[in-house]
Image (tube, rainbow, N blue to C red):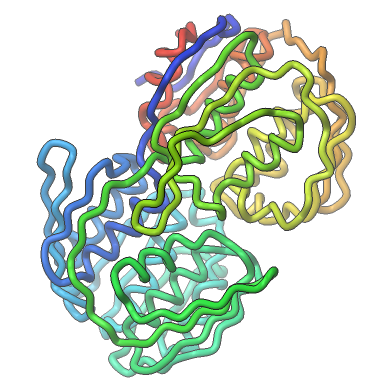
Length: 441
């Protein structure tokens, strides 16, 4: 695969049905929980991205075998105390914050030293938000400058904790939930609203969990330890991957798309709500519930009169992975769009808030910033003719895909580096976009 993509032509009108890869959040969680179940779990439509493949490698290192038959992964689990570790074990988690943080939770009861490390990008991210609650459980964990590499020694004598998750981080919440699963007693969690995939999986697997929801917080109680049985799971499509095709269609002329069988969990559909507030007309078809998760086909049509938005801050957590592509829509909107308290974006695979602002300025859009609040001055007549080079963005897959959508909808001549970054979450991105008629070199 070449290191860069060349796009010199806008995409022509299209009317297509597509599928996208399996949901990344669900894929990683399903793999990790299958390794802790008792029996053989069967998972279909598993996302075969680097993050998920690294998850499979990790559980194999820890003693859980797996094999693939056609589109089906079979994973053997032997229960909550089944991890088998050789001495001085090192575990590589690549670029995946979800994998790195959740595996630390699962290692909470392993009384042996394990070293967790990741790639250059992941090693810049904050892991004290995980180490702090794990230490209260009784885990011995040491970080390097509050980040990876991390050295962890668990304990068989975990104690239940009361934990306040105030960042809106599903990764932090889930790591604590997984540690609680192995702890004797009741762990109580007060969590700012975030993705609830782990809670739904716990409920579906009959793991003892109590949930109470208020407007701002979720209250969770986990009773442990509690072994659970193996399971079958067909992973629905990823809305974060769908987001790029939603915006591609929205900003193209006379086009429509139906993206089939997508996870539309309300904690993930912030982008749909935000874009519809901006005068898009995105609808769900064939809605159903699968193992607690809402699933539907997403239908999108082109829209020429996009409006600006004062984005409600409460929507941030449900669109946290999609803000780069939302910024691109705001660049074409009529009026000034306002977004507040987006500091969490700079704690992702790259400093996405900084990169997003610089990208908008690169294509001629005025952006005002005050700390973590920004105003984007949209230009509905925005058309690009110059040459643009995108590089040095820490190989962030979402920056790469956002840049590709910009090139295909706004024009100009583009060279976009780090094509291999899409392996992190959406290996079939280029193949899928070519099916719509995009001319890409």
